[in-house]
Image 1 (cartoon, rainbow, N blue to C red):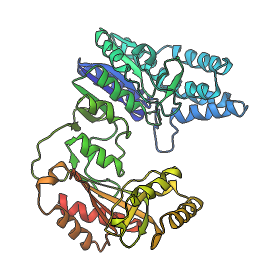
Image 2 (image 1 turned 180 degrees about the vertical axis):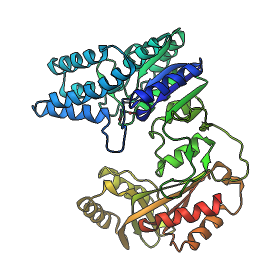
Image 3 (image 1 turned 120 degrees about the horizontal axis):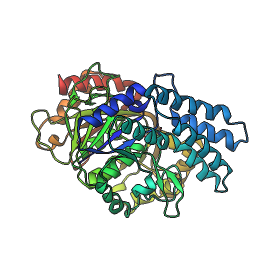
Image 4 (image 1 turned 45 degrees about the vertical axis):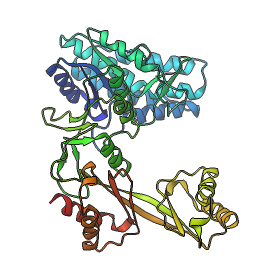
Length: 448
Ligand code: ASP
């Protein structure tokens, strides 16, 4: 049994939905389908979810929201007309928006219900379309499917009891179409995951039904081993482990929503990323274990927007609790950290810059100075992190040497190096402006 999830670009218009239906028809094991809301049809287009968020804002600000609603209706009407379906979904949309706004729930939850309407309507529409093609299909609301979530609007988490409920989806004889991106709290309030969260629904449902495969259909043939906007036509990755995917997505690979893999990983469900526009292509498979043949490195990821906080103090290594007190200051100020490379008398804490404006930086530096009495404390902004990722690395001599040589060839100064003891990745901190050159040179060293 397979769970197939189709992302926003795969359901953006009627033409794409026809491809989706063909994919579902092509394999009778595709029995549970999870869908996003219609995404962009072109670079300048607006996602339906964004239109719905705007609709909610207009309501909140007491503005006339009819134009906003109309834009949503127009998107769905064009799909309905092109597929020759009834106007049932349009009626549903109008009536639901009206009843959500007229109801007396909390504003937060009203906005959540509006935001989820893209997925909800599309799932109904797809199930109607599949039925019109003679397939036995039915729409299933996430409440009836058993998606029970925590009470955190816009950032809900799955509750453990959901999995047993979801297992019952195996009993349906029809193809079940479930909208992604939202579920319900125990009290029955609709809540959404964070943006892009249909991937989370897909992964949870796959874990719940204990699928043999979770297929995630998007608009790329596979995951590339490096960012294709930096290196032209890079090699494709055919197989990745969960750990490798996590390391790559941490530093800029945006194939998957960061949280999305967790349920599939825990249940050890293989995940396959495929292209709706080329469904017979191999895609990229993500599994718990794989053979390493040849290249120990699967990919190179990079991301900008980091800074370091450098603290040094003579005899720091003998001062009990120094690191804890430093991290405590960051905790008090609500800052999370990424890495802490250290020496005997110094410690750098690497952070995402967006968390630390100038005011917060001053507060933190002042506290470090008074509470820890260091010899030096300063920050460096404008760092990029480059991760070289591959499970095969731990049995291979010379990977770090090869990477350092590639950076030398590109004339890039290494500000920091970090290798976790799991040896799945090797990380280099460099100046942001050197990112592209560094990535290109590393790609040539490891993949050409
Ligand atoms: N439609 C939602 C969003 O745009 C969720 C998703 O597409 O995964 O964030």
